[in-house]
Length: 86
Image (cartoon, rainbow, N blue to C red):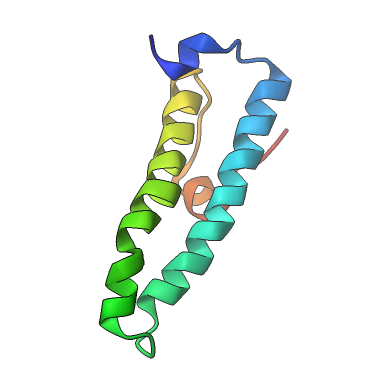
């Protein structure tokens, strides 16, 4: 059973899913700055790469997949800049 099938996509549930995505997006933006910072030693950045994937990128993709399964249209601009909450 898919995650999107486990929860009824009410307006409140969709809005909360978008808020959760937006929280992780902020974290992703902060982490990306750190990982792209040339002043941080490469070994230090590599040490955090796996956690970045598991704790940030994978959940972001899961939220987007659930929204897509629910028929919620999300633009590329929203994916990069934050989801609009109606």
